[in-house]
Image 1 (cartoon, rainbow, N blue to C red):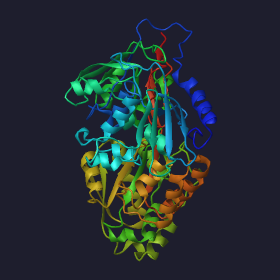
Image 2: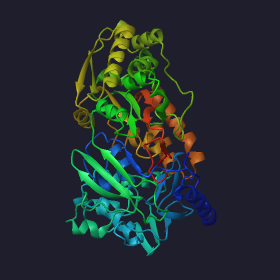
Image 3: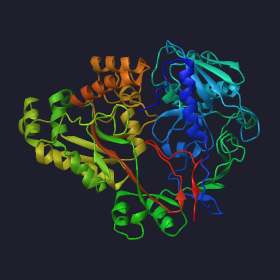
Image 4: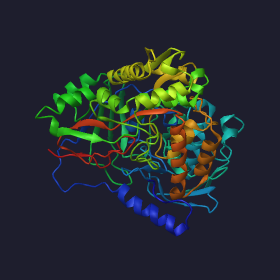
Length: 536
């Protein structure tokens, strides 16, 4: 649960941030002997679409660049919002004005001192038309004057004010209890103005100058990224000298490179996990890593009339064996998911399962919806992304369940993942498997962002006034203890009505060489490598 840093006196807020800061900025230099060659090597599975923090939408790119750039706040390994470039902050009693007090001694990689003006520039630039960010207005949403900047009416964001070189205020249009979580997203990372301007306004490898513990050293397209340690980082020199990230898209190639000693970390497919868990050498190097990614089934009521009947959706929910899906598709790595908020997330509804697997009851629900024995139910085509064997296996289990338990014939159609996402977003697919990974660790990022009737990302046709009202109240509340019950009730309502059908939530498995120490993760990804080091 995010640290309780909302709506309190200035003194208490500063104490909370200073306490969190103590755990964040320490370099954690080990008393043990480290390898003389402090080079961490692990693959990145894609060629980033962009190196501009304002435009990042992919977790691998975020995880790479978080070592180069920093924001005012971030998430720690306990999934709490903690300070980064802000040493502490104050929040006005009405929840509208956030005052950030910046750390002293923070320098960009070019040696220039960072100041409050850089914060203002970075937030404004993320919204400028020429930056071409498709996500900045979502994560900076609510800052006064945002629409004027997005529309081109103004270059300045009225809600962001420089008080002095070490202090900046951000004013919101209404209270938003999730604001600090959204502010941790890369769209708010602080970038170097002069480097971008010298590069013709582009932020690519030639202008990738941040304040983080590592500098951007090399980018050989389709081959490798190299980061080198920032010896002048305000928290001290990181233990690693270099981070090398070869671009390797094939997971089998990555596994071979790990076995050959060319990589220090390797992400496992479920198949490789099964094999490696039987390998005497490799099984001791397997680690479980948390994840908040949820795969779910979409039944769009506007595109398939049969799905407008809630009993039909509930029948399908009761007929699909989510535990079988988890076992068959992932060999037990993933877990069956019954609420939309994943385990470990604030507001997770432990024990929530409104539609337990029950084929007999599913058949009675389908009959009550007007389709006894599946008769007259339209033939379904289940579309799923061409991304992995595991997703294909998931689709096959769903088809088998629906055919055996409800006598519903289902065709399967595999599509390119990007094409499917576009089709879903443009309301061209009624029945499909999709997934969601959090942009920040807050229930608003799942429930309000995806299922509120006015949400720009609600591509699933769910509309419920009571659900909207619960999310509206929770979104505006600053006290997390008061927000959680509201989100839990909203989650319970949406799952009862099968707004979406959660299928599985995956913890992951990775291989890590025994000499890699200080590696940290949270529900989203690896954390920056300010504590990582090698002990051989």
